[in-house]
Length: 239
Image (tube, rainbow, N blue to C red; front, top):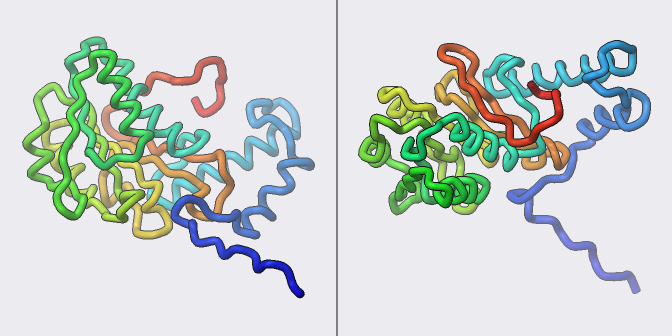
């Protein structure tokens, strides 16, 4: 008799296997091209640095961004945590408001809760019956002092897709920065930072057949500079 059938994996919404093409491209960097990309003074480091630059170009190209607008991190959770505390860390006054949606991923909700526990003014917007943030709702909660709005593009639980382009336009009318967590949208719907005009965007590789432990944050470079306080100190990589 044959043994039990192998289970069928049906949890791609949580994570995906690494695509064979991705694995093939990564393998040389575990043994042959193992240099530190920050060690550009020798061949091994230069090879690694060139590969990182190439990766930055490809990630930027996939969302309509320039290579120098891409910051590599350990995942979308790290990206979201760099945005919320990282931006708030530059604000001396605790009453400078931040706005998030009630249905955000925990990697946005929990940093926001942490900031609120430290006295930061955090507004949590309600969503409608379909889990969407209405532009009118956003308009109603923005105050003159608001510095950041964070609304996810595609919800990780119910799959609703917010019109982030419209929401970003509302934010920009009031000179407020707009961030979106696009982790669940990448590969499922069109994601283009030039079309949506967002200021910051988080994504993760393991949702789209890439490896675990790597993500990226898009930070708009045009116009007024967006400054983020580092959340991990002591490493010079990724600026």
